[in-house]
Image (cartoon, rainbow, N blue to C red; front, side, top):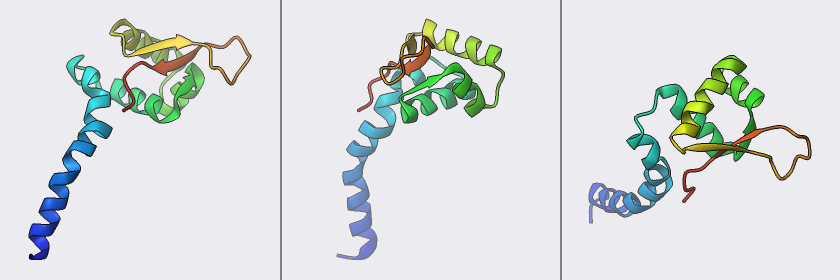
Length: 102
């Protein structure tokens, strides 16, 4: 079997894994027609698990007020929620992704 055919068959076998790891977690976001900044925030939350609004603001390069509006709009669509982080006892609101992670 030539190498190009073998590579194409291996790539074909990767499609279900890529779908489960990349597309499925963001299907809701894609249907919600989110902005690039909202998508960037969602990917940061997926990677980090939970973030304070200050950390999310710094990560996205926006003001705290803008990140509050950003998260409010994502919360309205059910893509994120605010709740306390289990690892932190301070009374700080953390933002969590509500999309499935697998």
